[in-house]
Length: 167
Image (cartoon, rainbow, N blue to C red; front, top):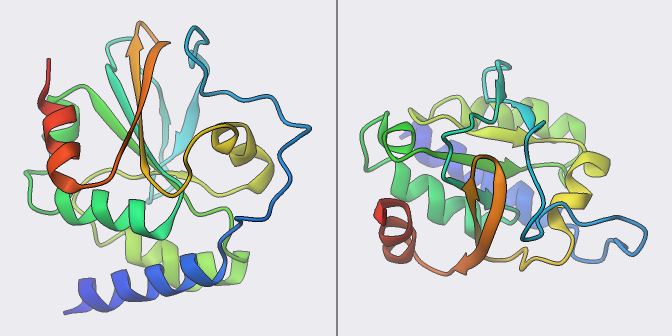
């Protein structure tokens, strides 16, 4: 029950704090085919730093409440090692929420998940990842030795599963 309440609170605050109107014209996009994500290091929901491993094949980004719910709801039905077993990482952008909301509601809610959630919690750091991608959908970045080879957007948990499990 606590997970459901936490997820509902996260959803409410992500919707209320959405950054649809932000100006990204001065920011250079990071999610571009041919670019490298070699130096990508983010903290997970417990504050532990993770650096992108060379064998990572896919990075799943959730920039919106709906995208995050699609991902988290699906990942909760899988075993805790599902993402790592499939050489995939999951990144949630919570940067649009005010810091008080993030610290009191969003981060504690994320700690209930059994899967690892890497966090983008700073608007300036998140902006280059948000630029020129469909922020309302699940964004999948395909990698080969940390170099972006393709980018795809998804609408459903079924698409998410098919994408992650495709070799």
